[in-house]
Length: 87
Image (cartoon, rainbow, N blue to C red; front, side):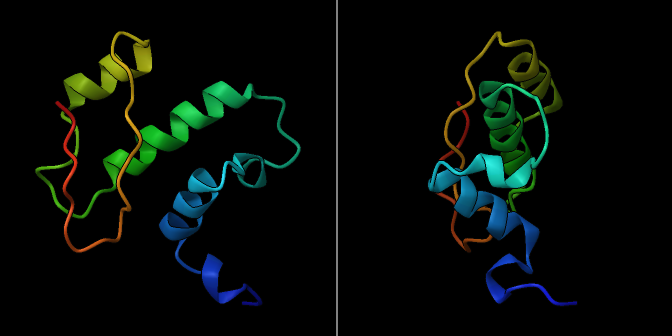
């Protein structure tokens, strides 16, 4: 594969794009609203956290998808210590 080293691990690349405000790099040629793309990326990053206690429950995931509760900024999915938890 001819992929730059910083894009080999998808979770790292998505998180970097999220931090840099460059989510448009992840959905080329898509007409989706930027707010919806950011919402899905943030929720996806929460759901792949290495520390299982940090991941949201399915009930919270549903509430976040419905817009009932806000999706906070996710921690780095590959960090060895996750400090932030969804309340």
